[in-house]
Image 1 (cartoon, one colour):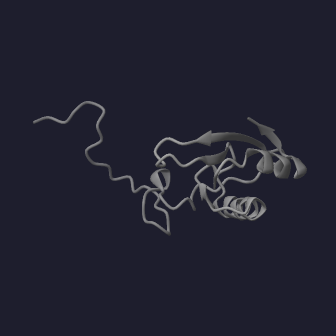
Image 2 (cartoon, rainbow, N blue to C red; image 1 turned 180 degrees about the vertical axis):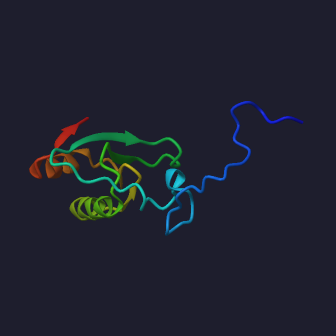
Length: 116
């Protein structure tokens, strides 16, 4: 059976791999290979999500740079300010509950532009 057109079957080109997870850099699963620098002007987008969470409400701060360590630090600050749990995801932070007002005041106090 011939190969489909456009489908790569074999390549002698060795792709660069992530030293931490071993995946190719373009498909890295751990996030170390794609750390972006933190810009001087940050625009954060706030939204509420319920779907796929068993009816629980989550406040999502999205549109942040892909910098794993910086996102963990931001998530920690937001969790402490709101007094709830949360996590850092690929391009944002998820905080448990409807915490839009508290998060908006905290982020605008840091000089960020907040939409939503």
